[in-house]
Amino acid sequence: MADTKISDSVIYIGANDHDIDLFESQYVVPNGVSYNSYVIIDEKIAVMDTADPRVTDIWFDNLEKALDGRTPDYLVVQHMEPDHAGNIKKLAEKYPEMKIVGNAKTFPMMKQFFTIDGLDERSVVVKEGDTLSLGSHTLQFVMAPMVHWPEVMVTYEQSEKLLFSA
Ligand SMILES: [Fe+2]
Image 1 (tube, rainbow, N blue to C red):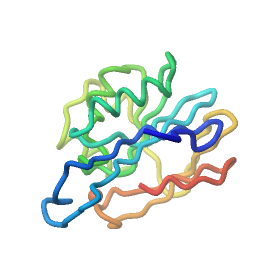
Image 2: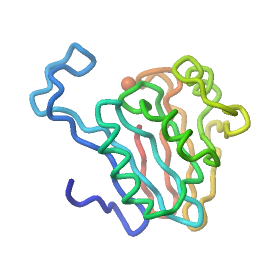
Image 3: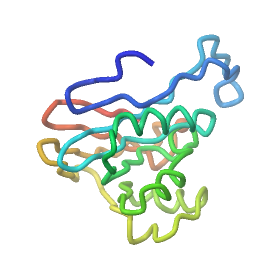
Image 4: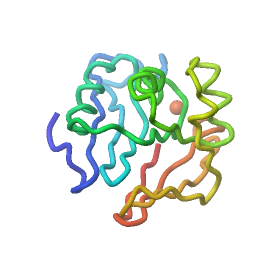
């Protein structure tokens, strides 16, 4: 994995999957797919989505390198399909203090995929336009229902003008 720094504060921790033959068991992907995931390092640390269970080990490796011994404060869940969300439970168990950020449609769906201890107490439910300060970075959430599934949202980081597009 090369060039993982998007900016001084934003690190790419995703993984490429060159072995997959069909995306969604349906579409031919001769070049494979990328599972995109990022960490934002600030006073508070946010992880933007996880990755498919096919790349769990490399994703956790990338995450730990990016964290460099620190602990994430938030996981932002922009989409619940397993290629984006397959490691939510593992991450939540590894970092029990970490809050999980989603919208009203995210969490009922999450409960269909995973049983996560204390999820309700750890949930931060956001709606259209809400913001979350990490320190010098501010995340703003924009709902994008049915871009794929009804819970999809994207996240705009105001200080660097970055869109995390799910
Ligand atoms: Fe999807």
